[in-house]
Amino acid sequence: MRSLTLGKASLRERWQVAVLLAPVFALLVACMVVPLSIMLLYSFWQSQAFSLVKELSVGNYLYVLGSPVFVGLTGKAVLYGLTVTAITLVIGFPVAYFLARRVTFTKALWIHAIIIPLFTSDLIRYFAWRTILGSSGVLNDVLLWSGLVDEPVRALINGPIAVVISLTHVYLPFMILALWASLEAIDPALIHAAMDLGARPARVFRKVVLPLALPGLVAGSLFVFVPVTGEYFGVNMMGGTTGFTITNAINDQFTSAMNWPLGSAMSFVLLFAIGFVVLAFLAGVRSLAVLRYRIGSG
Amino acid sequence: MSGRAPNLALSLAVGAVLVFLYAPVAVLVIFAFNESALSYTWTGFTLKWFEELASDRILLNWRNTILVSAGVVATATTIGTMAAYGLVKHRFRGKLAVVALMFIPIIVPRSILGIALLVSLNYLGVPRSLLTVILGQVFYVLPYVVIAIVSVIIVFDRRLEDAAMDLGATPWVTFRRITLPLIKNGIVVGAAVAFILSFSEFTLSYYLAGERQTLPIYVFSEFKYLITPKINALSATVVALVIVVTLLTEAVRHRAAALRRR
Image 1 (cartoon, each protein chain N blue to C red):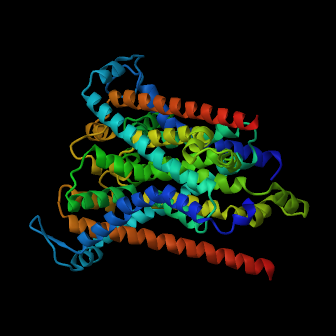
Image 2 (spheres, chains in turn purple, green):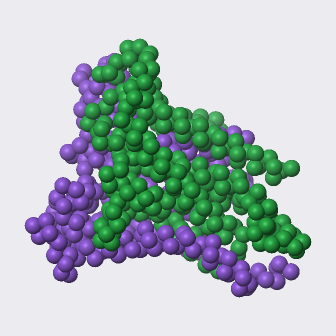
Image 3 (cartoon, each protein chain N blue to C red):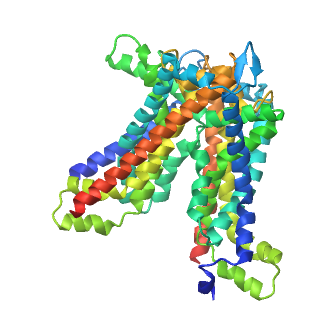
């Protein structure tokens, strides 16, 4: 009986689905569609002498895009995103591979080992890195003690290095879990078949494992790139005067400078930059896959 | 990929990553018991930072945080259970699109989300309060809650519901006596995920809390430039709490799996 009704859901069932999913969509509208629309409106208004002028103009956007400082800070945010994505990919892959292919009985335990840091507040982890990277911090103590350096390395804290290290730490679990999910789904028979046919491990990896892990690679990259590029607190706490990005400038517009329209325009410039990189990345992955398919079959 | 050398290299790489993941938090927790207030050199064991923490005005922030987390857990678990149940139980066209839409909060930077909510609350004349924090956080934790619940109730057998209905049970009785017990463990896991994420959430709260500070905001403003061992004690407490909740959740999940096998 059931199989007959599978194709077309009954009216009653459709209603049930609608009711069950309605709150999620209400929330999506209330917390996403409406706020972003209102912020878009604000970004076309102006702020003059701390009061709001509700006339539509693209002045804020021209100002942001015409300023080398703001464009540079947006670029820096994107650069952090790309750097951290690349690092988490490189160091996350072996771990994901290990979880998917080497662990069997203790798998749940290993997954938890990856998840627990994820559940430890970002804030706490930034504090932890401050204590480690600070000029009187643990890492410098070790370096001094080992005689590798004569005086504390101050470049470790309050700069781009500290930002990249701590953001890598915070977002690495996302990458590992996404990669693991797709590696776990690979049929081991495919790998064995390739090896039986005489392919060397490196070639098996490149021709079989990597293409099949592509969905996880894409998902993991999105989960890391987007929040890292938009990260404010990590950058603020670890970056010092040389490490901050457009997110600090945005926050300033909403707190000390009180220029909400300009801050809104900056936010949309950042969102568009993120969107552009993501679309370019997806297009690149797609054309790479198509290319491989053509070469493979031709 | 066989052979000893690659295996050894793989193990070393995994070990290094685990050290990288855990060392920072371990350092923080260890120094929570350090006597010295000034440097990070170990001078002796003490519990005084925890005592100081207990008598701090931080307690007010604890209260606010617990209120927010309770609200988020109740709301997100309810909405998340409904959505997860709808996704698992029913087949319908466009399910993939629905799932994709539900994942959007994960890929929007929280700082921008927080600011957009702040701007629109202002525009609509809604005052900021703990309620607005709850609203923002529910939105943020929901995808994770739905994933967690779906992962537990995915094997839900809808024939049991059909059987109950065929035997004359009303929809409500069916839900109460059949459905709810079956998906109970999923709900518990979802609630735990909501609690953990909400409890440590900071970016959204920062923009949405107004004058009512939650714990992470207090911590940020108080310790941003001066790190004292008190922050270590606080972090150690939070880490302990997170580990306990995670282990309890795992126990529930384990029991669910055991029941299923029977």
